[in-house]
Length: 347
Ligand code: KG4
Ligand code: ZN
Image (cartoon, rainbow, N blue to C red):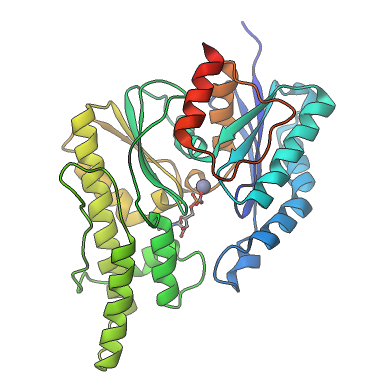
C-alpha cells in the first residue's frame, strides 16, 4: 500500500486566519479557523489594515494549534499549500510568507491556490466529484457559475456584472441596521417574514448566466426611503424575506437552467452565501426535478477555511503544480488564468 499523503494549507485572504491538514486529497485531519469578525463589526465591514495585523498575531498560534490537534509534525507533510489570491493584499501576504517560511525551512514543495478553487473543492470533503460539473459560487466577493470538465479546470460561464451576492446581503443588512456580516441576520429575519414587497429580478439578456445585484440593492434602499417619507413602516422581517426571495429566485433558476443546458452530473454550491437556508431549500426543491446531483457543503465548510485550500492544493500538487520561492500575493488572481496555469504545469 502506498504511503498516506498529507497537505498542510494556510488561508488568510480576508478576515479568517486558518490552517488545515488534509490526508489523501479528501480526508479532513484538522481544520482550525481563527475569526476576526468581532474586531471588524464596529466598522461595519472588514478593515484591511486591521485584518493584516490580526493575521500576523494569529498565524503562528493557528499553525501550532493545527499541528497539535493532528498529532503530526511539519516533517510529516508532503507539501504546503496557500491561498495566493484573490483577496486583500496585506492579508494574503501574511499567509503566503508563512507558507514560504515553513516550506523553505522544511524543504517542502509549495503550492499556490486560488481562493475560489478552494471554495469549490470544499465539497470534495463530502463527496467525490463527477465531471462535467457546475459550481455556483456565491461569496462576499464572487458570484459565478463555473464549469469543470476535469480536476483543476475552471471555465466561467456566468458572473456578476456588479455586486457579489454576499456583498448585496451585507449592504442591505447595513440599510436595515443589522450587524456585520449581514448575510446570516437577513437569513434569520427572512425566515420570520413574508414576501410583501415585489423587488425586481435581474434576469439580464435571454440565455445569459451573468448576474447583477446592484439594482436590487438600490431598489431596497429606495423602497425604504420612500416608505419613510410617506410615514409607512415596512417590517424588517418582510424586507429581508422579499429581498432574499429575489436573490434566491435568480440564483436557483439560473443554476437549474445551466445544469440542464450543460448536461452536468453534479451542481456544487460554494462560498459563504451557500450557508443561506432560503437558497439551500430552493435549490434542493428545484434540483429534485433535474437529472443532476446537488452538493451543498455543511455550513462550517461554506465560509472561509483552510481545509478547502488543502483539498484544492492537494489536487494541484498531484497534477504537478509547484510554486517557486518567488510566490507572491496576487489580490486580483483570475480563476481561468489559474486554471490554465495548472494545466500547463501538467502538460
Ligand atoms: O465565502 P465567504 O466566507 O468569504 C468570501 O470569500 O467572500 O463569504 C462571506 C459572505 C458575506 O457576505 C456573508 O454575509 C455571507 O457570505 N453569508 C451569508 C450567510 N452566511 C454568510 N449570506 C446569506 N445567508 C447566510 N446564511
Ligand atoms: Zn471565501
